[in-house]
View (tube, rainbow, N blue to C red):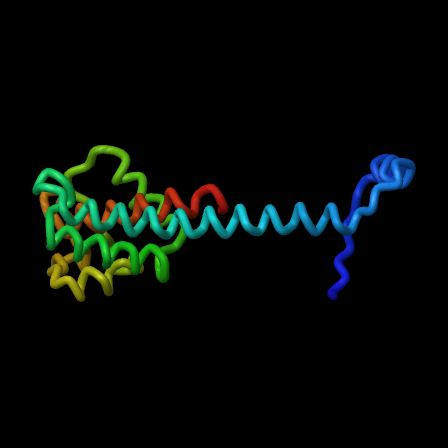
Length: 155
């Protein structure tokens, strides 16, 4: 069985010793409970994201936009989880939480490959202009909000 050192304040160590408490079994139980709690939370988070994605796909046009919105959402999840920088993801998530109509995306943005893959044309100035009216874009932004809400508490 591996050995793990646990550091406690001197005063607490003295009280534990005076009380004759066996530290190992207590620490083992506490660690086991914490690991179980974290695993359950991670599983619940993953399951909730799946449920949210499924529900979004069934939203009417006022939501993220059916099948096209679902494709945008999947592209957004992929970009947010694998490529986005902190600044980019926080900005996109902020858009999802506040009103906007057109978003200019510069040519150097890490989202550009996803936009090209989705068939968005670049403007003459090398920017993309994303419109909230586009279901794919709403899905993309919605995914950014979902991922941001999951990761923000642990950043």
